[in-house]
Image (cartoon, rainbow, N blue to C red; front, side):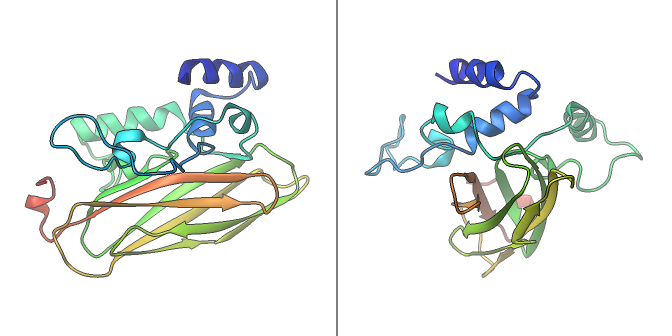
Length: 208
């Protein structure tokens, strides 16, 4: 269904980049399944966002997402170059996937605090205001600054905000999940999933 919905969005918005189309699909899904669902494989467990992604695709909403998370292809190139062969042009944080402007946030190594930046592009009404609503992962404090973004006629149609994560306790834990949603109070609800894993020491960050 995904490719068909992507083709539908491209037919309505031929100027959109692949990243904008992906964002429109991810941020407008329905994440209410009615009852817990089981993940495939063994051992059996309750499915989480790593299993089912954002949720059920909603083609009608995806055509009119309100906001999208776009990304420059050069950012992917820089990320891979700095991950595989770091040089003097690479900063300490460019190798972290959560600094790419993706329509989700996954922090695998939260010891104390981490700040992640995102930029949204308004593709809805030129004059509108969005307010952030956060569902924080268990054991983590999440704040958004600014928590209100406003777009005006004739003004910039992009807005950058930061998401600050702080561990409430020092534990070596598994991933916990939440979300960040931008609401315009009318028709648009722009939701991205959030996954955070708290750690104590770097050398056991990848231990399950």
